Image (cartoon, rainbow, N blue to C red; front, side, top):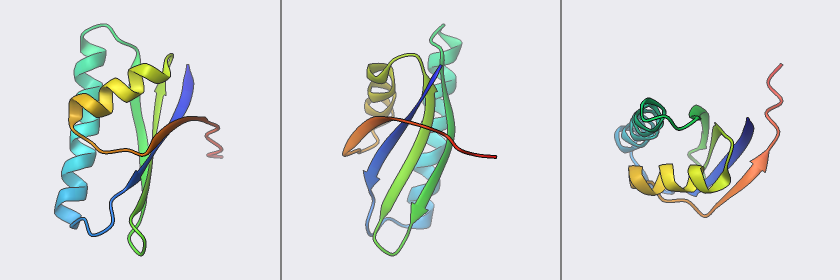
Amino acid sequence: MTVYMVERNLKGISMEDLAGAQRAAIATAADMSANGERIAYIRSTFAPEDGRCMCLFESNDIEQVRRLNDKAGLPYSQVVEALDLTP
């Protein structure tokens, strides 16, 4: 599977709403997986100073990642293929 990075601008979001967005991404990925789609939420990184948020998903299809975020009601500026360099 391929890793995709979802870029978001969440400037001004509260920590409570940020946690809710993360829960929505995780739950939607789990729901899609339970229905036979191969997709997984990996993690997010948030920069509160300027509101940038980068979320990583694993999937076979970039459109599937877009669909997950649309279903979860999560805003994004773009989705790109990425390399997860976690040691």
